[in-house]
Length: 106
Image (cartoon, rainbow, N blue to C red; front, side, top):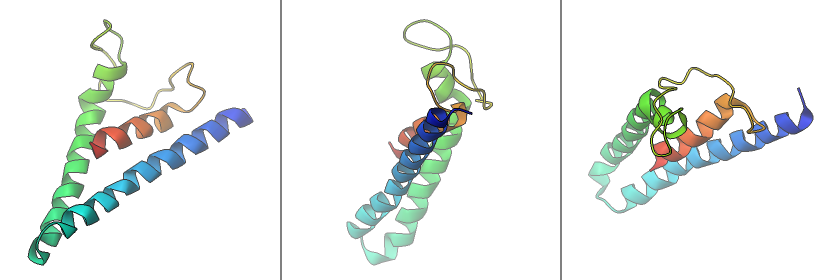
């Protein structure tokens, strides 16, 4: 493996983890805006939302965004299976996790 490839993958992986950890800050922000009795419900709802959006992005979102097709929609690569994306300079799984972090955060 090339050192540049590994360093790019490491940097993007760290960035993805930081974006996923931002969800914790969002939980604290939302919990501070509600009554104390609803704190657990807010945290559970936010984590459940991230989990569901991650599954949907894995199943169809990645294929729609990065699949082969026309200039608007992709019609392939549904249910991402870990293949490497050529021309990015980093691992395909790391790229998927980075995109998943932003899709799940929104």
